[in-house]
Image 1 (tube, one colour):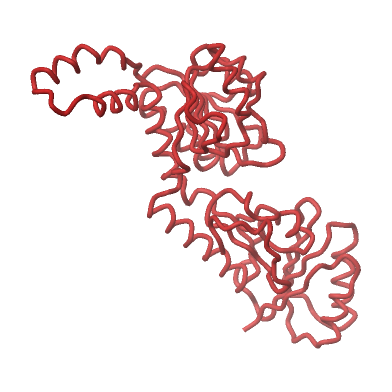
Image 2 (image 1 turned 90 degrees about the vertical axis):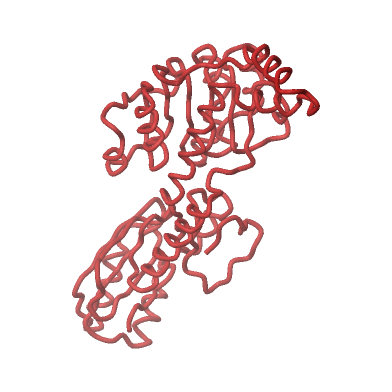
Length: 356
């Protein structure tokens, strides 16, 4: 189980059967290598959602009202000013930090999962109009999205209408560079972009051009990059999204619970590379078999069990991309020869016995 440590340059022990990330992102885990070895990779979506949501709301307010500029201005005032002088300066200069209310503005949420749906609801609670875009929205996630959120068919449509745009999509190959020059230059004039997902989702150079051309007003991100630090119109926080004691504890507990359930029952919840599998409480001995997702594998496995006189009490088989996973409850002990035969089948990656 890990949080920030990177496994990209670490040799994973041959005995490892699962890795759990205490957080939603898994860019510090070599997913490709884990797939080759049949290692289940878990994450904890939603465990830090409230922490991130609260920081997004803070950033919405900071970007709508020049709070940062106002604080910096007051800090710069001479300490030897008397009360009258200080009040006069503050009242004279406060117009420089005039902002806008969020009520009535349009909030576009890209990605309507655990965090995005919470941000959408909070926007509605603040009197904002909320629209959303998520081409990969699951049925389960859709239940969490408030009915008042109007869905858009394209990212360009959402950017073209929104005063504020909050990004909440995972970093995968399809989302890398999702917000590029074309998308940004098509944004509603003066829009504010909030990136609390992952840095590579937004093209940094395109942000500079969009701000300089007035296409967007402000870019707020939790992921500082050298080319944007200090640039006018850019506000960075030092990756504070899940930096609360509550979020860290929630993520760690959720990751540990998922690992324990997998070790004790073989069930898989919140894996980024394996299918979700739940076969309930184990009855007797359970086999967990990982194989390449090719035709005929389940038949080969069950035929081998039948040939050895092993009765199958319950079975579930699911696949995801190039991997397939089988849980098989059997009613008698397995001998070493049968296990060896299962493990020697072409395209079988691992066989694990789960018993008392």
